[in-house]
Length: 484
Image (cartoon, rainbow, N blue to C red; front, side, top):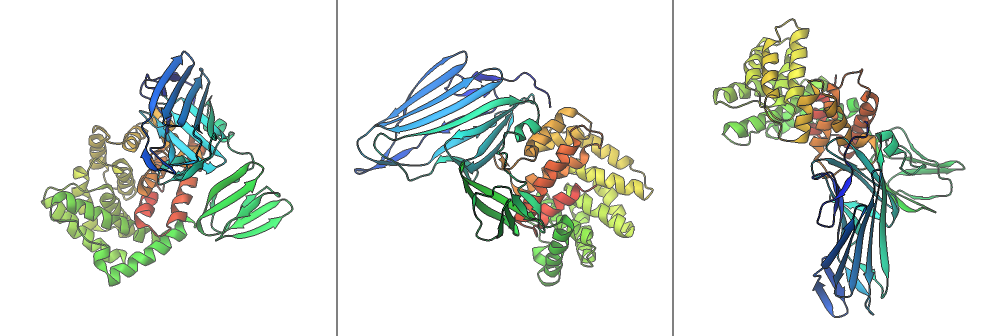
């Protein structure tokens, strides 16, 4: 990624943005205060002053004072906030947040206590990274918390938050701003996390910890919260000990197979009688079938029958099949050269829904037909129709532009995956959306210069997902949809 034109500029409301509509960092001040006299709602009054390279807003509410200041230039940007209790009594405040607004760009946040990183990506690809210099940040339910609710401010006490940012040329340059001691946080389940901090204190309640002269070896399963205490303060890490994808698929397939035998309605249950509800229910069934196919489970034959009958009824009612319905039918054609599945697939392809995953699914269908010597022309026509439709979300637009070879989409996808950094996109996506982003990396050519970092970022994201819930068939189906 190269540096382009977006740079910080005042937005006229006390904030500073990358371009007119780009991302920004804002401070959300507490809304309530508790004193010895009771609880009050804070009515903040503000005044903003600015010049060509500085915006400062002062706030006042009773005896509380706050100052938020942005200092910026073409390649640097510092955000500093302070909150002061000027009264003679201690006060307790409600939560104080750091709001990372994406605007027409993207954002990525790692908030780990005494360490943190905020990455803003402008619509033109300009990349800005902020490291935490003073204060503490943590993530909570998709919000970035500076001061927890209930924080007490003694008389005259002032608390300060400072983020120092600069324009970066690549995600490698952003990664260099992380703490130098930070190890890889997402590993295969049988691998340890090696923390090369021999003098640090490590607390990991559900992990095995082995301390040695060179540092600490941490082993665990799933997602684990680990606290590291040192001269730098306390840093809270989320470690992901993930099974291999094949192991996760095998385990999930066993659970799906058991449900097929014992509670079939948990696997194949339509949401209603309307075409949209039937299509949504069929696509959920198809995701289970994709997992069973990958694990070579015998129960795939049962689900195949449900899907074939369901697709025939759906097409007769004018419904549009989803991407996993096509992918699962293609899987049946490949698995057993199933003539009924082939006929159903060819009937369904022209009616495909132009939603998330449609290009991925059609790519898979085209490969299946070509591999078995069938004419892929219906797929080419369906793909042309899907590409002509407007994408409703950023990931849908990325999916449709990637397949046409546009380089801007590669940079956007890398930003959606956070370049492989710890943390999460803002706003925090649903698990299936994160898996969707991972699957989209399969549309990148091997010759793409960003290919290695994309593969690395996708691997990290996939490990986090499978560590969180290794048996989620919906997430696993998305990851399998992106398997080459």
